[in-house]
Length: 163
Image 1 (cartoon, helix red, strand yellow):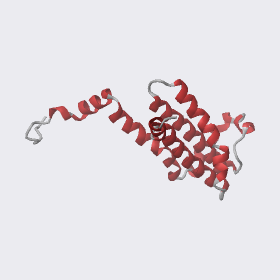
Image 2 (spheres, rainbow, N blue to C red; image 1 turned 30 degrees about the horizontal axis):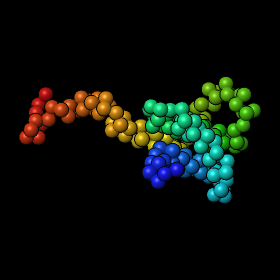
Image 3 (cartoon, one colour; image 1 turned 90 degrees about the vertical axis):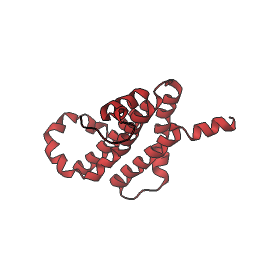
Image 4 (cartoon, rainbow, N blue to C red; image 1 turned 60 degrees about the vertical axis):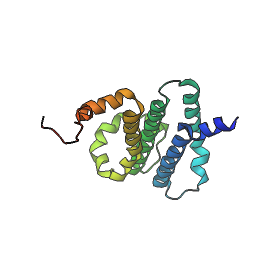
């Protein structure tokens, strides 16, 4: 591997999203297991995350960032669901629990009482990265923002006009 391709790989979305997902995984482990060794999430979560990211790298030619973002959203949802399940039932979610998914609507109101607002920060990066990618990453996104805020209609003197 040449130096330029290694630099491109290290500065690409693979490493960036790996770091984000490992932080989220560690936070989910801390909430569920209280204290954990640092190597546990690395040993258990990292291979699964890398398999998903390698599939993205191999098969996604276009819109790779959006697919990474979708994978991030999916894994964030799984982490959030595992945290909420543990907070409600006191056990770790497993395949037996998934067979009883139809009972979710009956416990929905009591789940909101267990929801700490800081658990929703697990989704903050999806909103920030998605918004940034939409505005900066695509020309149509930039044009939509300019149209929405009428940035093209700013007069040369910079003084606002009445509409």
